[in-house]
Amino acid sequence: MAKRRTEESEMKLRFTYNLMLAEIDALRTEIEELKRGIRHEQRELWDFRLQQVVPLNDKISSARLVEYDPQGKQYIVAGAGSNSHGICKVSVLDSWQTLWVPLHQQLIKAMSINSESLLLTTSFDRTLKLSSLHNNNVLLSYGLPCPGWSCGFDKDNSERCWAGLANGSVQLFDIRMTRGPLAQGKVSSTPIHAIASLGGDKLGISSLDGLRILKIAHLNEAEETVSFVDAYANRIPSCCPFAFDDSVLAMASKGCPGRFAVGRLSCDENSSKMEWKVMYEGKSHHPVTSFVRPSLLSLPSEDLAVFPDRTELRLVKIKRDTGDREERKLLVDSNCIVDCCFARSIDSLQLAVLAERQLSIFS
Image (cartoon, rainbow, N blue to C red; front, side, top):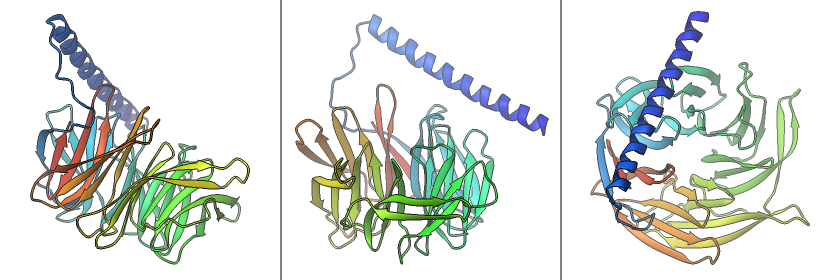
């Protein structure tokens, strides 16, 4: 056991060392360019251009989700292999090298990555798993009473995470406990398509009932139960996965054509109720299914949202001070877009677009 801990510590130290070397090389290059008086072409932050097209690992036959691991500087693609379902790691630092890691026996329905490179996945195989992206080991595996449909880390407590299930229940887990959920409660009669901790005991969920903003009313750890009340009186008409960042929600509504929307959540201090203000709303050019997942990035002066719309991306920029909106379309290729995500570093912004068995990187 001690030997294994030592090996894991050495691996983490080696990983951190390589990251530091890469950062040093990038700084040296920037300094040299400044010395020569070279200036990069000035353009808007969201003026994305194709940088790289990365074929995925041969062991992944179909892909459906992509997320960015900021600590590891790598993209994580979830999909199906020949005999299992897992993730394909795509390294930004190591010349876009890929690595296949099997995790589940059935479809991975959702995944989430925290700041410590911990990966949370839930699957139709009725498990919720916590894995380390440093060494590709499964740290925890929880059995679920039915297929998992959504998952996410708690915004206020790094030791806790949530899972949304096919039977309309949500479960709260404490990763310091291995026996099962800390608490669970029924919130819908239909599967929970998406779940996100919004902070301050508030939880966002979407199902066929619509998108609801809930507040924890009572958490009983002894009886392993949790109950909720609606923090926002009205249900927002969206049953698709949604994105949340710094009080801003981006969502898609199922239909033909579907609808895209970006709005801001705020709390009424007098009534403690949530208020919802729509900042952008638009129609899709193609049918929207419950698998369409927007991506969102909140910056100090503006909010950026991106919506997959068949073979193109709908990009929306909203100024925080004035509310002014600007919209663009980004044509990717002839393949149908499966998923997308933003990746932000200190001085750059990337947009990863997953289509078929390749990952297109725009910057």
